[in-house]
Image (spheres, rainbow, N blue to C red):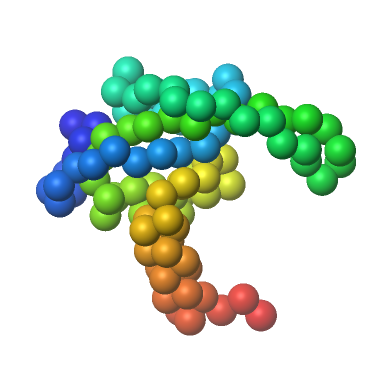
Amino acid sequence: MSEHINMAYDDPREIKIRIKEGSYTLIHDWFGDHYRKVDSITETDDEGSKVNYDIVVVRTSEFMMVHWALQYGTAVEIMDEDIREKVREELKRMEKRYGMH
């Protein structure tokens, strides 16, 4: 099921996601135990505080990952550039429909 979230049947593939360290509830809710941590990074936020992030890999539908990213985009970041571009394209279509004025 985690490879075809919401029943999308394009070929699943591995996709990297950046999440705050210890914030696995969202990942676990969607992917169960079907993910793996591959890296950790530390960044400085706007207030100057250090924030630790984990990079995890999931195997799932590229099509559905675009829409999943739109739903959870403030809590996660998709690291795959092809999917990031598709998210940007979808956001442009949404901006035309909903406007940002």
